[in-house]
Image 1 (cartoon, helix red, strand yellow):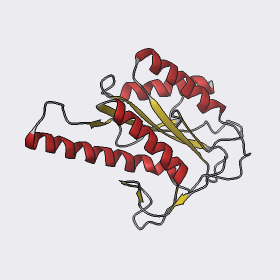
Image 2 (tube, helix red, strand yellow):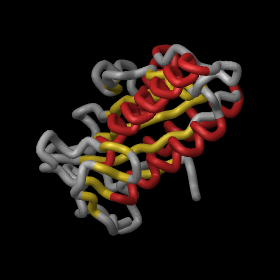
Image 3 (cartoon, helix red, strand yellow):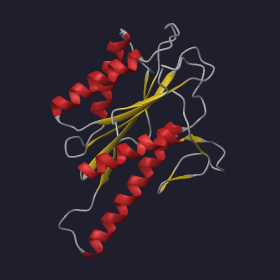
Length: 209
């Protein structure tokens, strides 16, 4: 899979994106589009949405591999668990690799904020499932809990009026823009190698439009 459009500006649609303090970094437009679609879908469906961010790594003892079977397995289990609990989960991951032997993954998840208010139990589930997928007992450092986790994107209450509604709308817009900015980091061009076989995905999303 090859990326087609590269974004050099610090804006995408109506959102500010994370491309460096001086616009020195570029982002892939197809990844930004997928992130936008997930935000649009979730905020249209639920009045409260929670953002969860984490990164995944492999043990140094693992052999190099040109596939995404491990993360595909992980998110299949997470999605099955989500359907059982009705948390309305949507996700996106990107594959990156610098000079290290093995790739790493940056992941974003949006869930129904009426079902999940605390992000930590979800991240512990990710830790346990990732260890299971890798077949390891100790997974210290293999799942990184990112900053700004658990941000609640909350629409104004239906019965709010006047200045209260205006304040709630402003808070909603700020949280939505902050969340998109943090997730736009996943779209950066840097470290997304083109040396993989064409059938190996550089990113994947639960949402298809």
